[in-house]
Image (cartoon, rainbow, N blue to C red; front, side):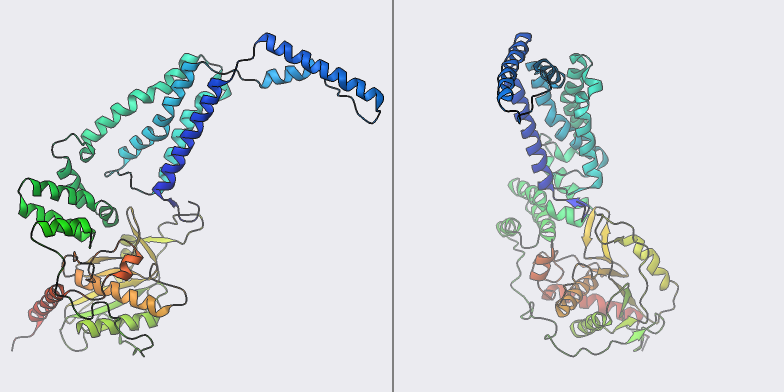
Length: 480
């Protein structure tokens, strides 16, 4: 939490479960405790007096043994000040029932209230943990010395309130704001699938691709095969290579695993150690050095090595045949928008970064169609999506080097960067991500999946890409 500012959900739920279990054990121990009565204190006093008498006799014989200056009555009086008699059984039972309501139910209710999309699969940040700690503090209030002196009726009312209010408020919240959680709703699976597909956080959406597959299976059972295929394909874009999704698509007669794959789909772009030429440096006005044809310009922001830019430019030129140049200067990173953990590196929200970058190219005169790939050393995020690799736009895209960099392996870092740039360039033409993990445009849910997917587009995706480039060039070609 201190390092990254976020905690894995399983750690939070495990901690809450262990905490509740430990408190239940303490409550049971208190229930089994025998209350000390006046006669018990008297018996304890007498036992201590007998022990002191024996000790006094020993000190008379051995002058090195110091006598105990505190009398038995003083010792018992001190114990009575510290003693807390066990509370009645009903109070202990109410506290035990209130514990999950305060530590689980109330935080969930508050998180549902502040979120447009609530899921138990979310990771927890500073704000989420503060909500949980605040609910734990509310639960502990009756144990404070000031409150403990009040009547037990007030304590019972405080602990009983969430047992009735939280379920009622949660039912209203599900009905009004989160209907996709209502398993009794006849359209429950449709609502869940449509909610996932509406999310702007692609990382969060991909974690819930199963909801989309579930609705596709329901449509298939109802005989609505075309709609089932449509939703299954959308789910596969979120989770390429899903056994559940591919199995369903095969049953629907529309397998998404293409038999037509480029033979070099997984081959590296260039052999390691190849001498990479220096890419042409340019301004926006001079990007089109070969006439008004579609051109790609790489715009570095932050500490991006020139060797990385040259590598990407060479790969784009070899793989696509598109003229590629590098902007003549490195733009500085703007002020970071957050630091998620106390010891973590700073991060940049993509929109904030673009606001400081795009004025550099706005209003410039271009000789032909131009797309810009902003390559930055900054670690990116978008809303709730953290550690974002890249984002595509109609004018090009933004690619972060931060997650691809590996100490001591510059060639792998450059290969990853080129791979992501290739994918972003294709997607900037509004070509949908592939459902096949062998395609460079398929969605990876992490760096291992990114490294495992193909380095090039499948033939059909490549055909669409080259057609769109050709159409763009025809529109800007001078009449013959």
